[in-house]
Length: 172
Image (cartoon, rainbow, N blue to C red):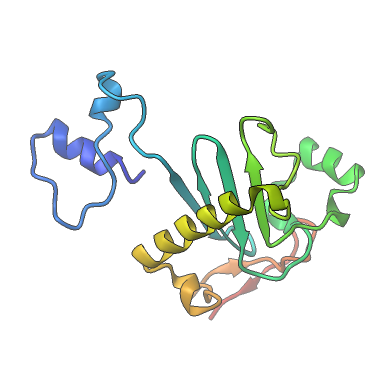
C-alpha cells in the first residue's frame, strides 16, 4: 500500500510531499523497470490475538522475527476452516515457532527449512537482521519501545485459545 499514494500523485501530476515513503508504480506498469524495491517489509501486531512479528523479504531471502515469547502458533489468528482442521489433525498446535526464521526462497520456496541457525548463512542472517532493524528505526516502530498495548476498545482473544470464536476480552 505504501506505493499507491506516490502512484496517484504521479497520475494526477501532483508533487510528492516531502514525508512520502514509497515509490510510484508507474515505471513498473510502463515496463521501464523490473522492480521498485530491493526489499519489502511486513508487520503484524494484532489480529484476533497479540502476535507481534516483523519481516523483510528480498528476491532470494525472507527473514521473520517474532517479538513475543509465545512458543506455539497463535491459533485464534488463523480463521476456522477445513484447512485449519487438517493442520490441527497433523499436530500444528504442538509445533513450536522460533523467534527468528530465515528462508532461501530460491531453493526453498515453500519455506519448509528454517535456516536461521545454519552457520553457512550467518552473514545473510546478519544482513537481514540489520535491514529489519534499520527499517524499524526509520519507521519508529512501536515494538522498539516494548510490547504494544492494545488500542482502547479492542476485542482480543487469548493467544492460547483454539479459535477466534472463543470468548474474548475487551481492552478498556
